[in-house]
Image (cartoon, rainbow, N blue to C red; front, side):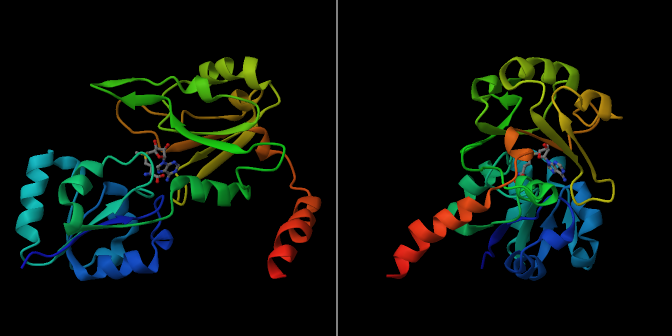
Length: 251
Ligand SMILES: C[S@@+](CC[C@H](N)C(=O)[O-])C[C@H]1O[C@@H](n2cnc3c(N)ncnc32)[C@H](O)[C@@H]1O
């Protein structure tokens, strides 16, 4: 019998973000593929299991390992954040289709929003949230034209930024203005977590180190840009919904 393969959204780093259902499937899997940071932070749930770093293998090498392991037990992958966005694991999910299950987790953007205590859309401020990256993988990594999404009424969430902050803010200021809020969230939920907030005009002076991608380390920072970060939600928006939507549904 061949056992199932579970692709489990593991959250931004700390084990507390794992869902109860994800934990259940992790517990029953003897073989686990987990990127390095999760080997440390999920230690207590990985005791007695055989743990491998998926990034050590080519696609076919990984498939032969999985095939071997699933003769004996189910196999779990701990996915950074959640599968919804910017996940390199999709080729395996497409390959295994019905033989695998994808379990949702806490995406990095969800954690970032919680840390900032901000929903990323607000009436009259931003009705659209763009999750994008400054690079995209075509035949090789290329710059991605994320600037086409930059607008005053959009909240921009940047993953995997590789553009130096000075240059990034220089490009954004002519469209969004110097006063536009920006937050950089580094290593969310890990012991090294840092959050730096400011405006496009002053963030470079506030940042003390380089949070972004280098040849040695992937970027572990998320950038959120948009006026929604400084606006307070109006109580009238709650009352409007009560009177015009929720009350009417009760009748
Ligand atoms: C390959 S994407 C993974 C996104 C993930 N699938 C999700 O659901 O959020 C990697 C990028 O996510 C962001 N990221 C991942 N973990 C993070 C963390 N703990 N703190 C801040 N940003 C993180 C960084 O922008 C990083 O370059």
